[in-house]
Amino acid sequence: ISQPTPTLDQTTGWQTYIDTKFGYSITYPSEWLFNTETRSCREGDIFSVSIVGKDQKKDTELYDGGSVTIGEPIKTEKDIRTWVKEYYPVNNLDDEPNIFSEDTIASLSFQKFFTCGLGCFTYYNIKNNGYVYRIVIFAGGTDKINYEQTLSQILSTFKFLGTEGCIKEGNYVGVPEVLAGKDCCPGLVGITCFEPYPNGGCPMVGGNCGVCTKCGDKECGLGENKCNCPE
Image (cartoon, rainbow, N blue to C red; front, side, top):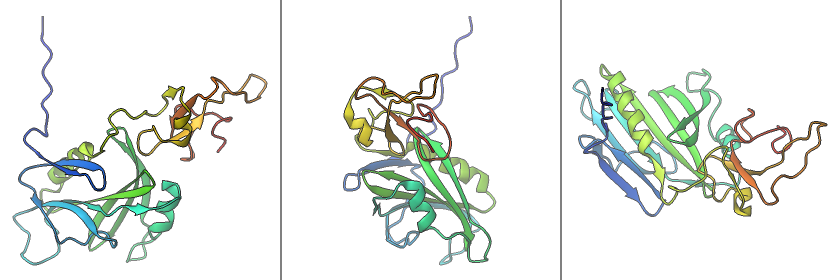
């Protein structure tokens, strides 16, 4: 009888950075260096690590290597999709269109912004407890593909402190707090458990029942229907 091959944890031996002030943690390779003087976000950076390739010249902008930076969280009452569209420019410095998209990493739903200027950067944006968090990544040089793979692994380790038991997309609960999104995982919103009757009516199901969803992303996802998310 063949035995299953154990899965190798690619992050074994990595360093974990825990920010108790802003409530998140992230893990990165031990050979990546911690930076304290980066300026990736105009409001200021609170975390940054990078690795430099062999072709990188001293005292120049990073073009051969990889980096990941977290900007200081920005308080907003707007939903994350509206905030991203208003915060970032439509075109880059060469008047070419920037790219807006979405991505889910380790159960967290991000709004992505990709732009090129002095290098190409991807901004991962997510809202949690009324603040927008921005994670900026860069990869370039001859080992760009390897850097991109490592950056994907780093992003998968990002998590908000105290959210291990948060409610994932499509999961129903019987508590009113979810209707305000308080118990939903970051990037999700709480809506009521309305389900349409065959005749098209929209009754309430389950009293204070709520469900955590991506309502507002212009797609009908898990737990959503025309009654509880008429977008």
